[in-house]
Amino acid sequence: MRAEASDSLPAVGDPTSGASSPASPEPPEPTLPGLTNARGLGLSRVPIRVRESAVTLGGWRLLVATDQGDGSITLVDAGTPEPVHRGEGIFLGWPPERLAAAYTMLAPPDEAALFDLPQLG
Image 1 (cartoon, rainbow, N blue to C red):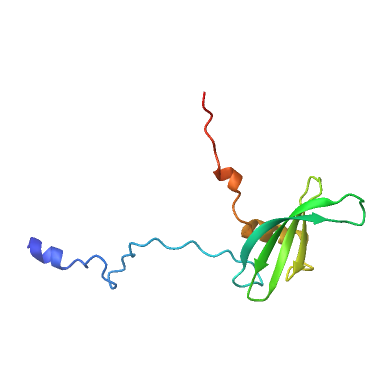
Image 2: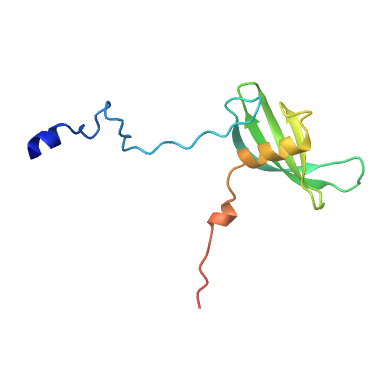
């Protein structure tokens, strides 16, 4: 009887058994409404000039490629409590809230957070 019970169980890895494959599923790609296959290509430090100030500001430009076209989002170091984002290319005319969300989603992770030196002594 014991042999009959084990014969009725589906084999491991049997596609009809409904068991998941041993490979872990890949995390979902970040999605932005209106854009397909959006991916950040990297950050670069850029100087920024504004009409209201005679001082050159700095910022971080995130280059982005999508199926609809290329563009960039710049995070301006304006010294204000709220971050200032500027869109170029495909992002021109986007509202600030949408630019901030896209920048956060597509920017590479902060490497400083990953770099940790133990304190010795």
